[in-house]
Structures are given as C-alpha cells and as structure tokens.
Image (cartoon, rainbow, N blue to C red; front, side, top):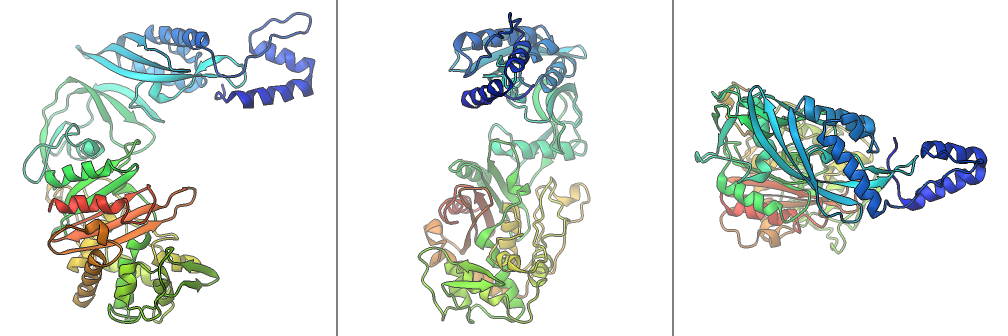
Length: 543
C-alpha cells in the first residue's frame, strides 16, 4: 500500500480522478473502501487527517494484533504491510519476544505514544523487556483508510531502515574497553562512544579473552555496522580491551559536540598517532568523526600550502597576492565577504586570513600539475590510499587528480576533495611534526596490523606550516576560537558549501602542544564560529 499523504494532495488528486473518470472511478473507489454502494453511487472516500476516533480505533486494532503475535493482521493496519509483517514476524520468531502488553498514552493529534512490556525468552533463559515508542496515524493514499504510518521504529525506537531484532548467543564476546589511564569506558558515561564500542567489540571481542553471552540485539542487515545490544539474557565474560582514548579529552569532546547539531570531533596525539577522543552529536548513530566524507573547506589549505612550498612555488614569507577574485579556466572564485584585497600579501598572510584567491592564483605556477595536490596528500600526509587500519572502520580521505575548475576548487577544499575530522586531525599532526603517524584507536600489537606509511614533510616545510598555523591562531581567522589557550597553539579555519544544504559546513583544526584536533559541524558560518569552539574545548584538556 502507498504512503499516506497530506489532505490537500489527496483531495486534489481524487477530485480530478472523479471528475475525469465519472461512474467508473466511483466504483473503483467504492471497491477500495470496501463500500457496496447502490444504484451506482459509491461511498465517499475520506480525506484529511484522521480524526480522534479513527486514531484510537486504528491503534487499538494494531496493538491488539501485535500483542497476540498476529503479524499479518497487525501489518494490515499499516501503510506498508509487506515491511511491517516482516519485522513484526521477526519480533516474535527471531527476537523471541513474548507476553507482549502495549499501553497507549494520550494522543497528540495523530501521534500516539505507548509503552511496551514483554518478556524475552531463549534457551531456557528469560528477562523482562520494557521500552517506550510512538507512532503516527495517516490517511491511506489509495483507500482513505486511517493507517499506522509504518517505520521500523514503531516496533522499537532503536530500529532504522533494514534493521531487525534477533535474540541469540552473541556473535562476539563482550569487552570491557578501557582508556589509556585504565578507566572503564561505557556508553552510559560517554554516549557518543556507543557505536565505537560496538565496533570494537565486533572486531576484538574474540581477541580480548572473553566468552559470549545471550542477547537481544538490533541487527543492521543493510550495511556493515555491528549489532547493537538491547538486553542481556545471560552475561558473557568480558575481555579487557585497552584503547588509546583519554577520558579527560573524551569528556570534553562529548560535552563540546552537544552544542551543535550534526557535529563531530577527533583528537589525536601527534607524537604517536594515538586517538585521544572521538565524539559525534548525531541522530543516526553514524560515526562521522571517522567515516564522514565531506569537503573540508579552507582547512585543506594546510596541504595546499605544503604543496606550494615543497614545489618551490613560494615560501611562508614569499609572495601570495590576495586579489578580490580569481578566474581559473572559466570559473570565478571569490573570498569571504568583507576581506580586503592585498596584492602584496605573503603566503603566511593569505593563509592566516584564509584568502581563497591567493591559493587559486598560485596553483597555475610551474612545476605544478593536475597531479601535484594528489601527490602531496598521498605521499606526504598519508591520505587517499585506502590503507589506514585504525582498529575500526574509517575513511582515509580522498584528493583525486582532476583538471578544469575542480583542480582550483580542490586547492581550497571544495570540488571533489573529501575528508573526515579524523583525516584533518591527522593532517595537523603531520604538519606540526613533519612525520605521518597513522591514527589508531587500538594498538596494532594486539592483532599485528600494519599501519599505513607515508614520506612525511621536509623540516623546512614543517617549520613554515607550524608557524603559519600559529599566526592563524593568534592573529588570524582562528584567533577568537583559540583565545585563552596557553602553550604552543596553532589552527586553521574552514567552511565548505555542500550541494543541497542551505548552510555551509563549518570546519576547524588546531593543535596545542602534543594534541591535535579537528571538528566539523553542519551549523554554517565560518570555521571559527561553530567547529572552532569544539576543537578549543578539547585542546583545553591537554589530552
């Protein structure tokens, strides 16, 4: 059955249908509504939002069938009976959930909250299950019937598209993940670590010395995400897994990302590559901090500046004029509103002010080619070769070799360049140490992983990059965000427009002594406005 639609749309569609098709259309609608109209006059198909009585009656029938385990009947009261029947069947057959009692709450319009109390019984073991949910009643597209608007979350709030429920002996033994100081890391204390801990358990559960238990889990059948445990029927023996996480940095990261929707941050230790913190504030459970793929905006100028210096195009104190605009192969590029042109600018000045046109102008200089930025990213910064082994799934960045306008756009972190906060934290770590150390969350000694390698930077390039980032943090676009931080500090701001998004993404990467961090939010503004305070909060902990 089709999805419910708004009243105006339904009314308009069927008014046109009746007007154009006459008696035959009335008979069709009568049949769809189960009406037995007489003398060629069909019962009128209802439109508009379901009323209070329809909402109450529909949910009562749906809940009653669900309680009895009658999946097909319950599904018939939804607007997607095929998907609903499949998941409701799994609720009883695969998840082994019985003795179901559903109590509806007070409806708010067509939205009905409810509580589910049941029992999960498997292999002689059982545990009570209780949770809250909500559903919406809509008008059926073809029938006009009030129907439950089907979403997997109707069955359980943790369920998303392609998910199902399963109770069985756990595929991986539980783990007791601990931070670098030996303290236990839990999703209750560090909520955004939940998906990370699940991934670590799946990868290292059988290597950490534990034994499996029996659990009710959300199985993410549509991708590679690990199972999400919901209820333990029989505890397994957890194995101890030491991670590189710094509890102080993680606490700061958790708190900082909550300030902005759709935000992520990663902190690493430049001298070792160890990941000190990873946090996401998202509704979808996606670890965008490690797996996100988005244009990094002007934070990319760290790599572009390194390319210019390494290829002898200019130096920190060499020329990098900043005109009001620059044209590359027919495409016009401009600076942020309000930036004063400076034809006598140095690379350091254009870097710390984040002048786009300066970088666009210089990428046409010899000996640079379409491949130069790609080579700098891969050979010097270890990006884009799909060989990072952090301990869990991660994206390694992408700086493809391109020509035309995208070559210019790539130099300022737009076009086809894609990065995650993890990638940009690593870029900063490489820039200030001169050595690429692949970030990792679990020691490679645990499973003999071979970490990615890269050439790294020349000492002179490193010195210039670090000094330009220092200037940006103390005198440039990152000054406000980094204010009040002591020690050796540096940063780079960025914002990136994304097709289809009303707001630009805000990026920021920075360092303080031996901690480097990068953040991205979808809150818009310049990098220092949203992502900047997140990074500064993490750097303030000192790792």
